Amino acid sequence: MQPSPERRRRRGIYVLPNLFTTLGLFAGFYSIVAAGQGQFGPACIAVLVSIITDGLDGRVARLTGTETDFGAEYDSLSDMVAFGVAPALLVYHWALRPLGKLGWLLAFFYAAAAALRLARFNTQPQVYGKKYFQGLPSPSAAALVTSAVWAGHQYGFPVWAGTPLAVLVAVAGGGLMVSNFRYHSFKEFDPRGRIPFFAAVLIAVGVAVVSTDPPTVLFILFASYAVSGPILTLHRRRRLRQSRHAA
Image 1 (cartoon, rainbow, N blue to C red):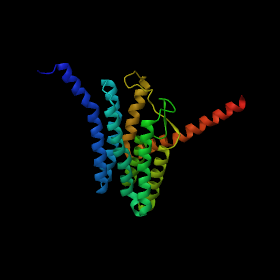
Image 2 (cartoon, one colour):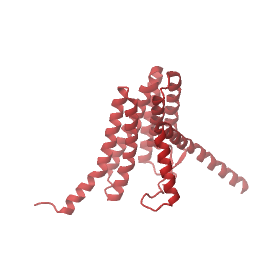
Image 3 (spheres, rainbow, N blue to C red):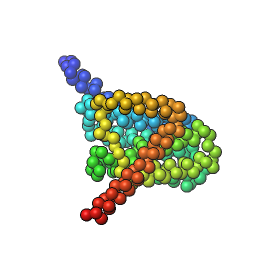
Image 4 (cartoon, rainbow, N blue to C red):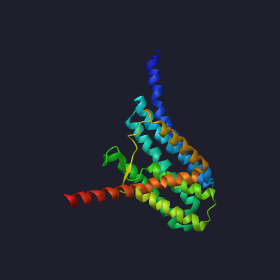
C-alpha cells in the first residue's frame, strides 16, 4: 500500500532542518581540513557558511513544525564542530602554532569554552529571557575568531602582529562565551514582518559596506557585538545601583 501524498510530504519536510544542520557540519569539517593545509581563506568562509546554516535550521524547523529532540541534539553536536573545534584549529594553524605548547593550550581553551557554552545553553533555563543571551553565543565567538584570521591572512600579518591578535580573540572569545554578560539575542525581530522603507535602505547600505572589505568589516561588526555584552551588563548594574541609592 502506497503512503498518502500528505504523509510523503511530511517526511520530506521533516528532513529539511537536519539537512541544513548537516551542511553546517560539513562546512565546519571542511574548515578543519582546509586550515590544516594552510588554506585559511576557504577555511574562514566555511565557518561563516556554518553560521548561516545554523541560523536557518532552527527557523526551518519552527516554520515547518518539525522540531524534535533529535534535531536539537544533532544541532548541538554540529555546533561543537563548526563553532568550537574548527575556529580553535583555524586560529592555531594561522598564528598560535609558533607559541608551541602554549599555542595549542590557548586553542583548547577556546574549544572547551565553546563546549561549556553549548552545554549551559542546553541544560540551564534562559536566565535573561528570550531577549538576551547569557554569555557570548558560540556562533558569534566563532565569527569573531574567523573574521580576525580572515582579515589577518588577507593583509598578510607577520608573526609579531598575527600572534597577539590570535591570542586576543581566542582568549576573549572563549572567556566571553562562559561569562555571565548579557547579549541581545535579536529574537524579537520577525523576518516575516513588515519593516519601514528606511530600514530597507539601511540594509542595502550595510550589504554594500560589507562587500567593500568583508574580512575587516565583519571583524569590526563581531568585535563590536562581543564588546557590547560587558558594556550592556555594566551599564545595567550601574543603573540598578543608582536606583537603589535613590530609593
